Length: 145
Image (cartoon, rainbow, N blue to C red; front, top):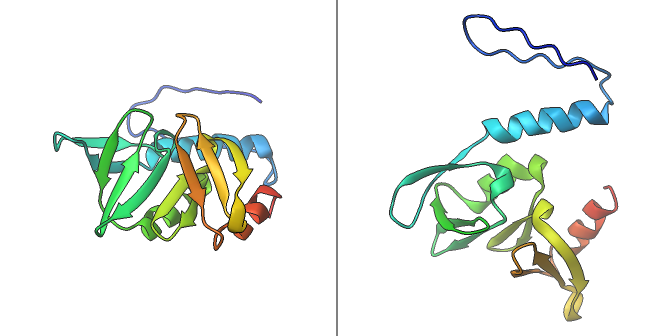
């Protein structure tokens, strides 16, 4: 990979060149998009904070309010869980329950549970249950589907 940086006045412009099927190109593109696709949330003191997809470990809706969880904090976010899932699906977000979505990049391990459910252990030690309704889609996703 060659890296060329040119300093010019005006707006920042990024040009990625390479084969369409390049995994390296896709990783760089994902990284750039991840940092440009911020979610504006409110922290516990009602301050506005911008979060990237990589910071959010999981999200849930409670009483029609969307909450997102990072490694150390909880934030209230605008919109719906479905909108968040669509917005950040390319960054590894996966709907795992009626009111829960998980960042698959934050999962440390998975364990089968009775009733067709799956338990996801996050890097923070939190455990999230993938319901039996969403378990087949997760299995398919993990197998490259």
